[in-house]
Length: 502
Image (tube, rainbow, N blue to C red):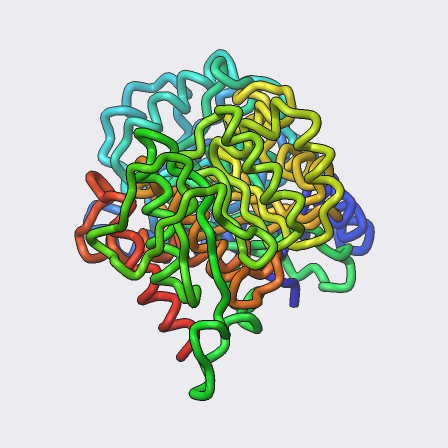
């Protein structure tokens, strides 16, 4: 059985597919794909109270053949199926031609792609089989208009392999601003899972993802360099606490930041570090305006120049600013060579200061960087559009360039190691799109490092817990609209304790 958490590139999938085709009867894989799609479609239809009318979009390649095979099976199950082919049937592959003949024999109804009934019918389900993983240019013409019409429908949409128009490797829309993609509620992806379904535009367009391996033996797959995040990847560093311990057993965290007018960012990071298990937490302020945190008096406030960075885990960046003092103090924290989380303005300073980059590369202690796409673009002398165009490649470049575990934030956060290993996070929702949520993540990361988590596991755990807390809050009706970063902190503490005790 294949690992359902493993993620593969289109190139790797193609290689596995070719080997499987060479060792299978003609049409066998398409028949399996159509059967898997038909079974899932039938399951989805059981919860619909509408008349069981299904619209099937069939494109010119094997993806269209999979859709046609699924249509035949649904017709044979007694459902009403309409099929539209926006391209001439002579564009279909040999296997897809056979699927077309089967569909015609099932007496499914064929309609034009611009038929008014597409928009006017109260469909129970749409099956998207227009384009699979091979699409390399923006969708135009009749297919564009068809997708635009389908995206306005209120019924469930099941995409086959990948939502048409979505890049399976990157999660970006093929063609960028000029392109379009199906907004599916469900995706059944074939042979193995693809990274693009889980990052960038992927989560909005793929919906709930199911993997159908099509009975391909696990030994045909190469080792995966990408996978989905889950507790099993970091559980070893989340252990119940022993009775015979004290605050010194769980490390010190110093949050380096809090320049004038931006103390709140440092406070959020510090509160997160304290509530997620650090033994002691210091706010290392550049400004002298914070005497203490009246909401959490356990936090200790110091001037940044009075912190001994060689004895603490440092979270550098929340509210740091980009002054000369900020740059110099950041340099001290970097060369101290103790566990370090680099966020926000600390990233911007490093991006602009070759001397800080040299100090960073000389480190041997644990280092985690947590850029959002704009900060990543500054670090790589790129643009936000280029970063988002291939988030996985960007995260790998950051991890390699700065020799640091990288958390590239965003929908489907990418965690990358310097050796190229990548994990995509599966938790989180739009509630995290609020000021300060990144500061909370940085503080959580620092707390885990201070308690002895290796940097890779600390990064995986921090991102997972941060997103899970947001998911739990939304389940209870707290967000996604209006959720504030401070509300995440006690919920992170709760889910962290549940994982440790469970």
